[in-house]
Structure formats: structure tokens, C-alpha cells
Image (tube, rainbow, N blue to C red):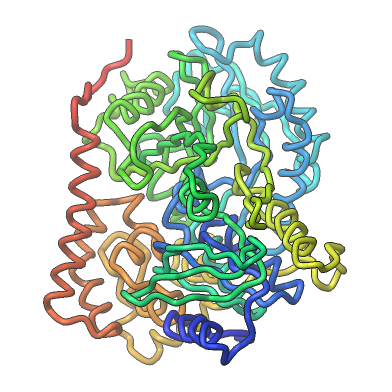
Length: 568
């Protein structure tokens, strides 16, 4: 690995060196370690700026690990008339598939067309066909795939548990899927290879200005220590927490973000048995949800599928657990309406193995004091703005377009520090391969395939741990592909510091099978204790914190629940 070592202690030492004057001041400090923040750090570092990024919690611990895990244009945005956003997203989708082929893969989608009792009827299907052609023309063609109409027999093979007697046909089209947390981490590590200082568990507590009122430093708190880091510029990429950062700079809380909640739930794949992603209607409000298979086993089957996403206002605390019984009822109601429950049975809360929810950082209109209208109708276009002190803020946007958001943000940073915003081809991120990129991706269900699809070329480093200690090749819990070596690797090379970091983000066990994650927790904690020199008290604290997190999720899902629910 070139550039800086991806070690938290090493990164903190770099910040201290800058604070003491032993190293040059930073050109830019980025606040926020989600997909947008790490994208900004990579773009800035690629242009040769001395760059630092600080994240209060863990990389992708907020929205960027809790998305729908899709890299897509957004068919519904096209239907809403947002052609520019769709064009941009489809162009970026293709770039991501080239730059991170180990993490971003082709994902077929099907929209079932039903003869009756469905939001998507034959009549609506005709208009949908026109929208599909628009999607292809706007940019869907970039991955060499065009939509097609499939007959009832073919559609039934993709979604065998639906109401087959009503199934008329289906539209097949193509987008891409990605492990959002792994993608965010890969971008952070790529930024480090370009010289960026990137650190988690480092909270911004103050933003300072010089005599001219221009930002010239930030104060960071990490491990009980405060570090004053000098910098020429600051980027606020804190997502739904952007207003809290703005209050440090501007003195007041501007209330400019309207958080929109997106909830997903996971169930065993055999309950649905769809071999590609399927879009199902929500009769209650005429929206739609995705059913996405996850965890290929190599024989055309999968471990799980997940259902989502909702799109509603969130009026609770930003750090609170966000999935409620009402949210789960909503998803299960739509799922059960789409399934032939007389044949496969009703899906209930007892079948749900995991839940997750993220908050989209949608930007309020300037005149909007109280939320009005549906969050689904708000634009997903991003905005870049500059405060009076020169802090650059990037807001809104979507995971797929993170690179464009970063490019626009760094353009503004360059202008603010008196540098040209023009980007040469050699310093552009458009063709920059992410750390670990490999063109090979397989899905045969083997450990080798599993590691390759998560780490790319870096899988060799994980396999080297197993070669040194065969016990590290054992799974962290039976029935799942994650091996003990991944825990060790997460600590040594991916800056994991807590049990939640490993179970929820370095692996994805927590969101797909929470009971299995709870069973794995003691063994994972023991491995982490050896690597991080935890004593018995710290091991117990980590286990207690994680168990309480799981208990809170479970309690929220069951509170005032209407489940089990039988659709009418």
C-alpha cells in the first residue's frame, strides 16, 4: 500500500504533528466519514491537496451503511421529470462498475405486470414501457443492457411466490448493487493511498476563524484529547448532521435539513425465492418497494432477501434508533400483498431476521419552515454552498452520485484557497480505480468467492492470515460466510475499534441476521480483545453495548405492533 498507513494511531499522530507545527498545515479538513465525505477526501487528495478527514463515529456508520445498497439511476426520478439527475447517476453508475468491479455488480430488476388487482396493471404497463425506453436512452445503455418485456412464464421463474394466476408478464431492466459500507471504506482507504489523513472516532468540537473572519482551524476531540488542527479550508460533509456542524461555524442552528427515513427489513430468501430484484407495489399509497436477494450461494439460491425502502419524514433524534413497528407493518403489508400467501404463508415479524434504517439528508427549500409535501417528491440533487467564514458545505445527493458531489465540492475548495479548479485527467477521479479493484467477480458460494467479492485483490491479505493460522478460516458463526480472519483484518487494516464496527459494517451480519450476530458476538469480542488489548471489563462493556443495541431494535419493532398481519 502506498501513501499513508491506514492505522488510526498513525492518523492521529499525523493530526498532532500538524497541530504542533512539525508538519504542514492542511489544505482542507473534511468533516464526515460517509460516502460523500470520503469521496471529497479522495478527490482533494487526488488533486494534490494536503487533506484530512475526521469522522465522529465510524466510517459509514450513518446513512451510508443503511441505504438500499443500489447504484442506480432511479427510474422514479425519471418519471418525476428529473432527467438531469438520472442521466448523471447512470453515467456515475458505469464509472463505479469500472472503478470498483469487486464491489459494484450488475443487478437485474423486474417489474411484474398483473392482470387485475394490482397497481401495475396492463394499462399502466404500456406507459411503463415508454419510461423504460427513456431510462435506456438516458444512460441505461452504458452498461450494455437494455430493458425487455418477458412473458408470464419467464416472469414466474424470477418471482415464483407471487400470484401466478394474475401474472401477465414483466419488465426486465438493469441497474447495479453494492455493499454500501464496504464501498465507503474502500474510498477512504483509496484516499489514504493518495496521502490523505483519515480517522474515525474523532469529533469536531469547534471551528475557528482568523482575525479576518476566515476559517483557519478545527478542534478535534479523540480519545479524550483535544487537537487543534490548522487548515486553509473546511468541508462540512456531515449529511443529516450538517446543521450541527454549521452551528459551530455560524453560531446558530439553521434547520436546513429535512431527514427522510428509509427502512428495510431482511427475511430468509426461501420465503420469497426471487432470483433477481423485484419491484412490488404498495397499494396503500401507490408507492413501490424493492425485494432484493442477498448472499448468493452459487446454485441460484441466496441466504436472504431484503424489502424496502420507505420514504417518510423523521421527527426523532438523529442518533436514535429509527425503525418502528409501523414501518415494519408497512413493508410486510406490501410484501404479503405481492405474495400468494395461500401457498407460501403470511410473512410476519417472527420471520424478520434484521432491520435497518437510514436518514436521507434532503435539503429544505429556502422558504420552508415546516415540512410540506412528501419526502419522496423532494429533489435528490446535491447543493454546494459556502458560509461567511469560508466553510464549504455539500448537502443532499445520493450514493450513486457521490463522486460528482465530491468533484463539485473540491472545485469550490480550490477556488476558496486561490487555486485553479480545473482538473487534469491525471488528477481526476473519473477513471481512478478504488483500492482492491479487480475485474474478477464470482458467486459460487465458496470462501474464496466470498472474500474476493468483499476485498478484491486485498483478499490475498485475508487469505494470508488464514495460511498463518488455520483457525482464522473458521466462520464466526455457523451458516454464514464471514470468517475469523476478517475480524482480525478489520482491526489491523480497516480501523475497526468496536464490536458494532465489525458486526454491522466490516461484516454485514447484524443487518441481515441479528440473531446470528448476537451468537457471534462473544467469539468476535474475544478476537478483538487479543488484537486491541481489551481487558475483561472492556470485553464485557462491548458485549453489553451491542446486546443493548439489539434489544433496542427488537423493542422498537415490537412496540404497538399490529403484527402478525394478514392482508385484506
